[in-house]
Image (cartoon, rainbow, N blue to C red; front, side, top):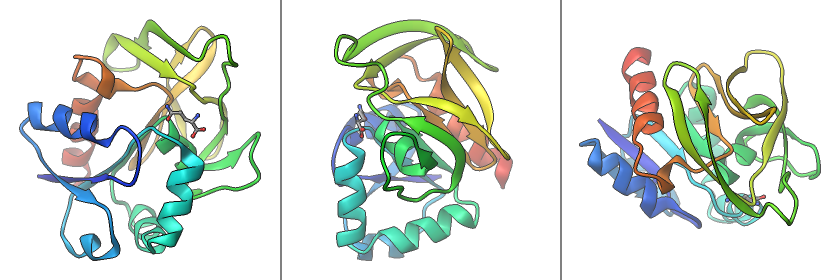
Length: 190
Ligand code: GLN
């Protein structure tokens, strides 16, 4: 199995390390020619969604990736990556891949809670560490998306077929369970 990690900006190296610990090789996507490789899944890291969205278009990676996601490529978006997949962003007019039936709110926890840690329940896994950094949360899911985790009353993880999103950063903790969940998704898809 090989997983592509969008490596334009943000916390992509941390995802690569998590996947390496799980024995999975990764390939970084930085330019259009990188899409010529074959890969079984895609990770979109946290960072800044506006920057990543702009670079995706400028580097001409946007159409090829959107098409692959729509055709069923398993994708895991964390934080900014989740914002890139949302069909609606409550406090931003510009959407990006817009492939997932979720409404998200950017920087939703306000300034005072810029960065914080909680342990909350993730469906099918149990209680796991969740690190939030200027995090969005999911205002609501609709259509085909289902909630996988809520934390203090806010939706923080969801899934829609081949798409998995978390508003927190599982790559910043030792716990490998959400990455393992994503690999299971890929294996059962095929
Ligand atoms: N605040 C960022 C955004 O709106 C997301 C933060 C993150 O990915 N850690 O894109």
